[in-house]
Length: 149
Image (cartoon, rainbow, N blue to C red):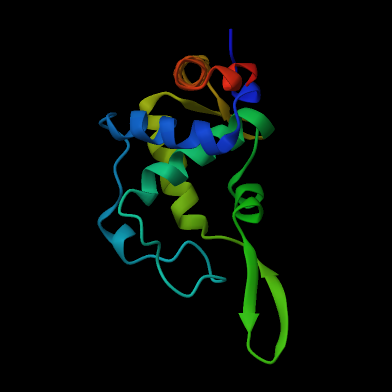
């Protein structure tokens, strides 16, 4: 069976985001339209469905790196802050966005708390593996050369 490791992130994350959008527990908070994703960003995301994409990316990151905590995810989603004439410095991403996304994924049963942070549950692992399998099937039907993913 195809797993998350077999499909590139650029192909898997949009597919998982579309599937997460259908789940009742995954929904952007009312402040999400105005929030930046970190101090290193100047503007909020332009994509109206960015919350689902971030939740899908977090779920994939936990699958690959888990168990992880919010601080480790903040580092993964951080970036260089433009300080004008001064050299850029790395700044962590928003912890509130990650906490809320993790709480929603946990409420849906895709993620569970463990001693070292959070890890993907059996339901979450099956959810991601099914998405990867369907993505591989769609890619092999569209372009036979992509069947090796």
